Length: 335
Image 1 (cartoon, helix red, strand yellow):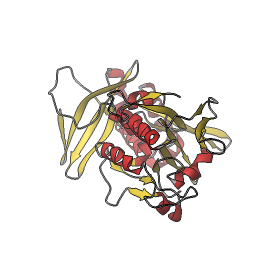
Image 2 (tube, rainbow, N blue to C red; image 1 turned 45 degrees about the vertical axis):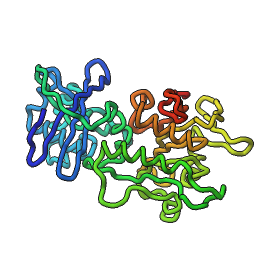
Image 3 (cartoon, rainbow, N blue to C red; image 1 turned 90 degrees about the vertical axis):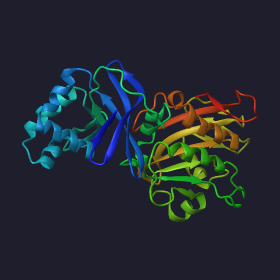
Image 4 (cartoon, rainbow, N blue to C red; image 1 turned 135 degrees about the vertical axis):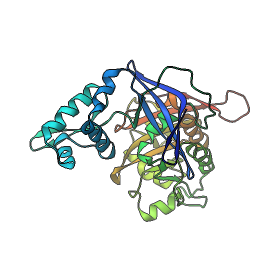
């Protein structure tokens, strides 16, 4: 289905995520001359969910909170309307499931609720079969886009993929063997986000020199091959230990991992800039890093199950060679 909006074409990709009993989401793709970008659309399947949007002020509230989440008093100031009017419509939008509390902040001795829309877009889908379309997106594109929500701005990838230098470097005096696997990651991300104008790939040595707190980062490779991953390691609840034997240890479960196929998918606040995040795709060896990338790009529905926005996330996976060709093609979840 195509919707004409200015010079852009929109289509609903035939994919659904059932988040709970009453909420269904689909993936909306915007195709422009500069590429494709996507966002999730929450389906409004009952009239009581649509009714609050009949008010022009409620519509403005939803649009403003989509731009910048805020608490009602501050939002009233932004809109230059009486705060009681804002509270009235906020309550209706919350009751309809169109707004949710993103976080709570202390304000003047009390707790202020910062509100945001529950989805990036809303839609009404009428009964009918629709028309078949060819989709360039993977079935789990939506959950990956949510996992990497900090890395996109208006559909454009806004962050860096940091790989280990191909030259001898770091305290282990080694070269990165798992950096080529970033090509697999880049190919996947290119189907989700439009590219920015400058390069998104940086060497770990380059980031070390310029500072690691400047942007959101996806680190490819473990602490031996990637010195930014080494600097991040002490801040992880699942980290790498090379004091006695090369292994991965989890302070969450107390379990050690020593198999070379083991990889880690982690998302944590950037320790050098709390306003940014770091996603780590790493392994005990290069095959472990490949397992982490496979988990994110091929089995995201399983691997990212339980992910919550704003919380630290860890998933330990093990690569599997199911087709017997000597290379990992799937993962199992260890933790």
